[in-house]
Length: 248
Ligand code: 13P
Image (cartoon, rainbow, N blue to C red; front, side, top):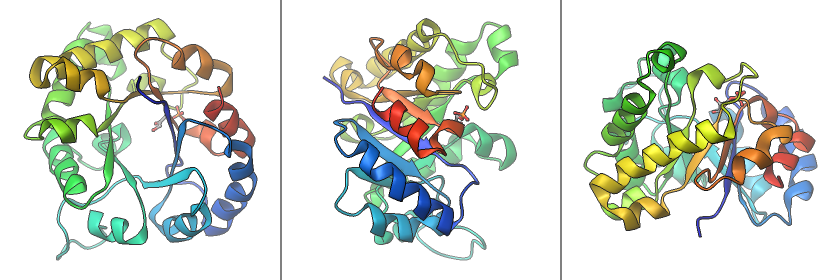
């Protein structure tokens, strides 16, 4: 049985004070949840969040990292730096980074390898654009992104990679993929992993759905055969609403 992993992606929201206020309200609301709960916050919030979350069931993640350990990369943050802080997870290859910050399948692959090298668990995003969906090439796009992201990883690393299937047209739009559609795409991703790394590995990989997840649709999505939880944007900013998603 795969566990459910519910991660909030705050994107560029919440300063240190706001992050602290959120946690005060959120931690008690989810303290009895058996699901894995992760908050992926802006870099500046991380040190404080790690210290607040210590001893609770809430884990902390970053939203990006560089693939080098250190060096002349102005403005960047390495996985080593995150790990040293006590961060456990890192989102890699979010569509907003692919779209606005030149993230490619190649840099995604480098970052995943670097994350494992320093002991961070990657949450890797894949997903098709609306135009690709309309052209009927969703399957090609998401299986190719998955294949290239995981290239060169060993079975153990693949099993420990969380994949987030986030159709780009569903992000921040209020349009959710139907649970059937999302589950089918996730099955296709799992099949692709199975072809390369074997059924055993594929059956253990956590694959989340992301894109306008809210408390009103979480249950329907997360109780399908292959959706193992969610990567939640807007609805993760409110403690009460996000706690309802965690406890779907
Ligand atoms: P929304 O939940 O706001 O649609 O964002 C989804 C997302 O991009 C999470 O990474």
